[in-house]
Length: 250
Image (cartoon, rainbow, N blue to C red; front, side):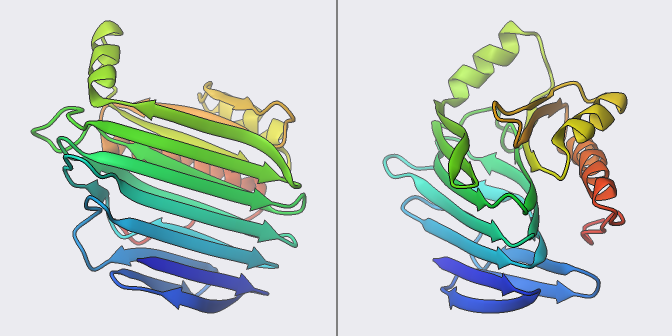
């Protein structure tokens, strides 16, 4: 199950489409891609692959709804992302939340490559699960790589269980069960960090080589989290001299 979609000089080029992966492409003011799936989510042994190459192009990507990962006794559901940006391209990926069902096993393999002239805004949201479940998933594995100017700028490689998160929130007496990671490469990361701090976002920091801005957000529910992300995203777009964008999900 895979989708390979490229943009060259703002024009889309579909290279591969295997069901149940689908997409809608809108192009009123900016390239806007909404990712869809005929199935109800990610099941054990599923391997979902998304590949995108942008050259002299801009694109906003979002999901149709939350990504649901179903229970598994043995096999992982696998979600693989592979992005390549060059020649002044810009990618803005605003994902809906990830919902890991009870006993779910999930593996995410993410790679983003960008040259010096390109920029990106990418975010992942992790929820506590369905309303009647609370971090009851078995295991989540993530390997996120960000390669800038052919050098590995930032790597996340971790394995986490639902039981660990339950204990963490209990120990810290926190009810902010929804959290998100935000990864940014902008024209001026330091300036954007200062802007976000002025808005009350103090959890953003520069990567070691200062080529990226990385932040962690937490909230009590998904609705509040999406509002926080929208403020950060709007700040990113304002720095690029582009207007706030409506994803059409209200």
